[in-house]
Image (cartoon, rainbow over all chains, first blue to last red; front, side):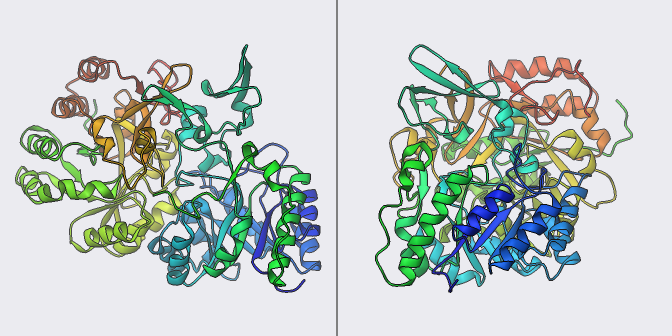
Amino acid sequence: MSESYLELVCPAGNPAALRVAIDAGADTVYCGFRDGTNARNYPGLNFDPDEMAEGVAYAHARGRKVLAAINTFPSAGGGEPWRRAVDNAAAAKVDAVIMADIGLLDYAAERHPDLRRHLSVQASAANALSIAFYRERFDVKRVVLPRVLSIAEVKALVDEIGIETEVFAFGSVGPMSEGRCFLSSYMTGLSPTSEGACAPASHVSYRKRDDCVESCLGGVTLNRIAEGEPAAYPTPCKGRYVTQGQASYLFEEPIGLNAIDILPQLKSAGVTALKIEGRQRSRAYVEQVVTAFRRTLDALAAGKPPPRDHGLHAIAEGGRQTEGAYKKGWR
Amino acid sequence: MSTAFPASQLTLGPLLFHWPKAQRRDFYFRIADEADVDCVYLGEVVCHKREPFFAPHIEEVTARLQAAGKQVVVSTLALVTTDAERAEIEAVAASGALVEANDVACLQLLGGRPHVVGPYVNVFNEGTRDYLVRNGAVRIVVPVEASARTLRVLADGGAGVELEVQVFGKQPLSVAMRCYHARSHGLTKDGCQFVCGLDPDGMPAETVDGQPILTINGVQTLSVGHGVLLNELTDLRAMGVGAFRLSPQAIDMVATAGIYRAVLTGRLAPDEALAQLRDLTGATPYVNGFLHGREGMSWVEPAEPALA
């Protein structure tokens, strides 16, 4: 494959999805081990060390890359699984590890100095000083930027930080400072930051009412959804709450992030890579999204008009899409 | 109560809500004159736009607190993105004051100098704790999500750092780029008209079926109930936690400090303290689930199993 317009970084929830993503044109895939060391610790997902090594071999044979997400915060006195995950990632010859915890970054930099380190969005590094902290101390080579910045803000950061940036291109809109949100554990007792599952399915339930369906997390009613109304997976930040006597999507509407129409602006801003979300999604989803972005990137690289018939709006969260903070920011 | 523990510090955390400047100044004057606390955190944590309101009074409030023998720490913003926000934390870091860093950006500025790590920086394990101690942390205020199991490891002696835990007040759950106070009033963040000032204890948010669930404070979301760790104080001290934070609410914080001090010094039993605190806080629910490894919004009675 020739040099990509922007590096396309795609989700691989399991070995089959990894092959689908690679075959559909991912430049890079990211995946996690099958435990709480990554932020998508959902049943039936992820890789054991052998599968990780096989995935890396499959990707490398085709000139592509694999990143290992080890991006939760190790538990106190119980850091062994996280250190082992870093060791296993190095042994599997992944191209980089994606991490957020300061102590774990320190371990990786000491123990595996040649293993490339990326800073996870879970580190919530939204400014040049924070990024400098991780770059100077742990030689982080790339930062995954929080999806709360406008293109102008992204460009200003790129100009200052001197390392690669990766931005979210397709998936959820996340208004909260990621990695520092305790809303899900407030309602479920299980922590996304430490245990790797926001709104775990074990705590999600639905109640049928006469004129609607209620979605619940823990014992908390997060939404009432009328028939035919768009709805998002019931994470706390996608619920309806009553303030000022009115029910509303207080934090964020049920809407998906899709940056496919602003890729030239992201490239001009100096962005290195695009991140597609969805390690918990189906292989068909991965194939469709990766294919759409691959065709668009290839058209842009060739100076041709990008295809308009990618159909991505139909699979966006809630069936609707937005360019999130990129165009106007959240001022 | 055993007296084998070192003296416990009682601290007053930064005011998280947007109070009128005169009220805020008078609040701190009364704290200086009357409150039995060892340390007071000043400074704006939630929204940079609020800073100018209190800035003219910072100097006199600091002087009054210090004259009363209280340590003063300057707290910084939990989320830093704009140039103005960055300039603000750079100014605080350069001021020579003892600073509480609430974003890694501030840790970058304070590296090599003694400082406090605030509860908005994720410190959940000993590896991160030890790294931050090497970076100059003299006190770490743990995130509210931390369980007793986590605290027991973090507070283990020999790390050369004091641990602080919030034991009263609504618990901060998240910070965001978007201002939910403004959004609730149909306004933008830039044109917010400071509507957060309408709610001195934050704006309640209920579920669609009427359950009070969250508190909105500008870009910040907090628990709907006060985090109250009174039954747990003895255990926390035994673990080695050295400082206990009261987060300011629009109630009598001097009396609140008196209640906690009385429990810390063994003059008041926790159940009596809870009854007295209830008189001050009215009907606001209490929560303590995070410490017990449960849903943060839950309340665990002392009859239930002791801290794991």
